[in-house]
Amino acid sequence: MSKYRELWDWFRSILIAIVLALLIRLFLFEVFVVEGRSMYPTLHESERLMVNKLIFRFEEPQIGDIVVFEFEPGRDFIKRVIGVPGTRVEIRNSRLYINDQLYTEPYLPANIEMNDFGPVEVPPAYLFLMGDYRQNSMDSRDSRVGFVSLEDLKGRAFFIFWPLWDARVINSEVD
Image (tube, rainbow, N blue to C red; front, side):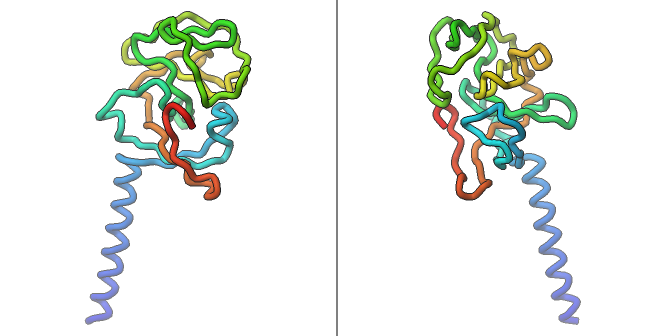
């Protein structure tokens, strides 16, 4: 009888662990793999990061946040928030202007080249997102992506855990 009791205890413990893991992944956190170089130098290809899926139920995305969104079914993108609803975004002479003010981006390499873009105003319930590797990023400047609906957000990236020697917290403004 005690053997069956011990097996039942093991089974129950494993079942509880699986249910908790599924609930955490479904509602709280999810792991994403960085594919491509569109967020270089902040994120590197094949890094694995944790995304907080619950955060945007309590607060709005902020300029500088690194977010994951569903670009199309089965294909997620990771980009940086550059414009929130009502924000005016423009790129002139390789410099980013938000609401007509020069916006410094310390996470980018010096003397980065960008094509002129805009000005555009971000509509309600949408975001303007850009990759940090501005010369090669399919982002809101591309008509295939355009403004990203707040409903398409999966969450905000907050921690890189792989590779272990590069594990770090992801800050919004300076990475």
